[in-house]
Length: 129
Image (tube, rainbow, N blue to C red; front, side, top):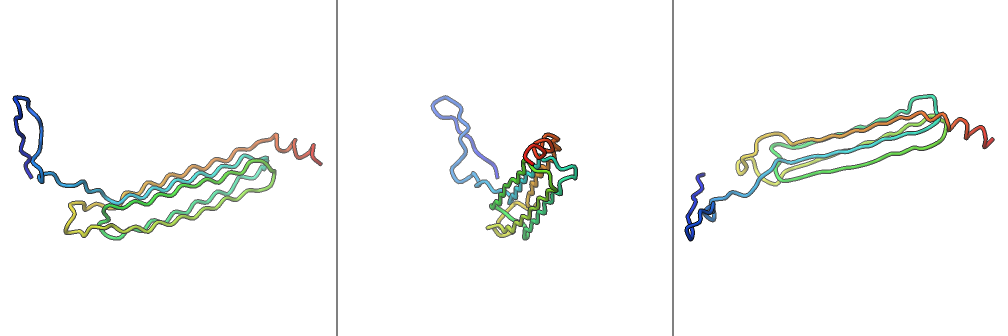
């Protein structure tokens, strides 16, 4: 589609004809952000599990799904297990014939897992006994 521009009052303005501009159309986007953190006196590594399931049907247009979570364990000397499950089901609102968008849904999974051994927890436990 070609846009037309006009010269108004001797000043060039880039003014497209009304109706010549198509509305913005975007693919569906799924963002899943998970942070799992453990700062403990356990000598065993923390078990951190993050399961993300994303299901999108066909040429998905104009929809978004966002999930954020955080799991934090501070202190203690026992074994730590952090488990997270996240499911996204997304469908667009435009039919494939009405949309120039043909690519897949944009998925942005972000996973941060931190496991810190803090030997001071062992001393704190000894003092409290």
